[in-house]
Amino acid sequence: MFTGIVEEIGTVKNIRTHQSVRTLDIACQTIVEDMHIGDSISVNGACLTVIDFTSNYFSVQVIKGTEDKTYLSQIKQNDEVNLERAMPGDGRFGGHFVLGHVDDKGVITHVNETSNSRIVSIKASPRIIKQMVKQGSITVDGVSLTVFDLRNDSFDIHLIPETRRSTILSSKQKGDSVHLETDVLFKYVERMMSRNESELTLDKLKAFGF
Image 1 (tube, one colour):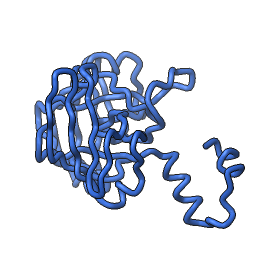
Image 2 (cartoon, one colour):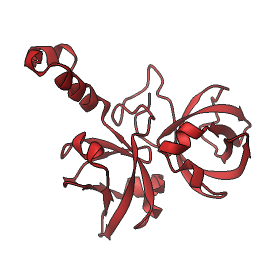
Image 3 (tube, rainbow, N blue to C red):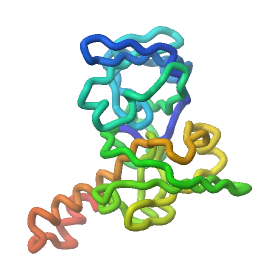
Image 4 (tube, rainbow, N blue to C red):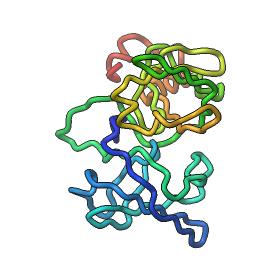
């Protein structure tokens, strides 16, 4: 479980492939301080497992199934990536519930820079759009953000200066791909409604924590 609050920007220093498994060595400083083999790390919003680490980098593997749902197969040496450790049980919850399971890829269609924000328009599939609401939460490349505007085939996010400073979203341009993960709470509501709409009541939604 993650929160969508990026802790650090890392740099891919080495990439190697063996028997269709792609291994990324990612240079960083902060998140290796209490790292262990087997830890879950969000890399641009995709939950990956630490297989090795030193004092200044860690290694993760990307299998075929993950490559199919993400753009991690296109990551190159020296590319920067958003990094977040799994949330500790006693940690402060700053973003929203993020699983690190990328739902789909979106494509940036427009970027508008203003004096205090960066407005980014992202084209998404109908399946993703159906799971979004205006002013709701969306994870873009591992960053917890608010849906500022929502259309039939795209949505807008606003990046404040702090988000631009602390994530790779400041360097994303028109035509770039991004990882999308919709709000898991909305998915539970959608699932319950599709299974048996006639038995879904406000009291039952409250019982499930909504």
